[in-house]
Amino acid sequence: MATATYPPPPPFYRLYKDYLEDPKSAPEPPPPIEGTYVCFGGTYTTSDVLPSLEEQGVRQLYPKGANVDFKKELRSLNGELQLHILELADILIERPSQYARRVEEISTVFKNLHHLLNSLRPHQARATLIHILELQIERRKQAVEDIKRRREEARSLLNESLATLDGQ
Picture 1 (cartoon, rainbow, N blue to C red):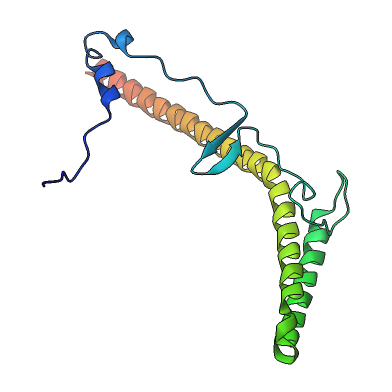
Picture 2: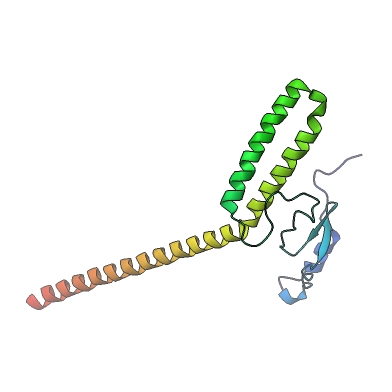
């Protein structure tokens, strides 16, 4: 039995057969999804809210609240991570059967680091957007200055041409 290299297109392509003659004949796109949805077996939500560590079932290692010193806490968690990795190396040498608890502690520290970094994403996005807009403003100012300079060059060239024509 022969098989095709590529499968046939889905049957709904027929809905667009008169599109070139009448673009309004095509069906309207579906409404945007709101709330939760399932994609490839995973449940996702359309809201961009960072879930707390407690909601994820992870113990929070840094203080709770709005005014967290991110730099201090990231350094603290980094030092704690290094300490746990050294302790894991010691345990793997001395008591290899007891490594699971240290690996779990390292996982908790990593999850806390990741959560702190994800908390900074909105700030990073705003700073990046501000930087991009400042670059666009600078480029536009340079373009305006270039146009003004070229206008003056053209004006002086026209004046020279008029003076040359008047002199003849």
